[in-house]
Length: 161
Image (cartoon, rainbow, N blue to C red; front, side):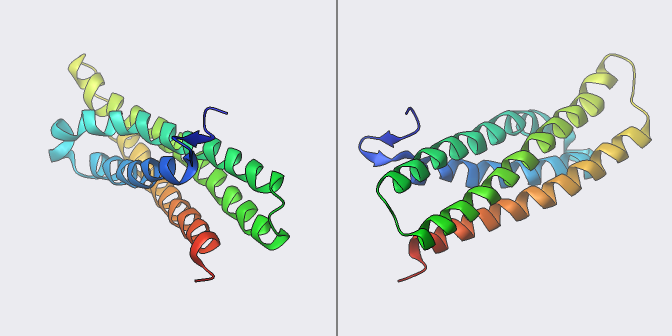
């Protein structure tokens, strides 16, 4: 029940904004870090920090969403509303599941491009290219599902106005 309410307000509408900010920022940082070698020095800690914060924010949004969905079911919301909430939850789960590997690839990319060369073992170029392509693909998918999740949630709440 930690993710149920914040000062009497359902936590999900409040918590979800962190994911809406941090997941797209991770997408941008991961791709920029991989594709733009000149910015790696300035962007390394940002990308690594976002690789930790973004999945956590998506996870907290998921947990708070599950609590909100439970409350709606307990309060006998109409089936059509619950169907919208279920679709929103499914998309949110996919967004979370895409954010996790994006975070891991981003951390690997930072390790390969920043940490390894400092230890005197530069990574092979093919590995950097492979990780950058993986980051780009995962970033595109995570961004897409984050937007879709937000859109279905907003339509569930505001669609009838």
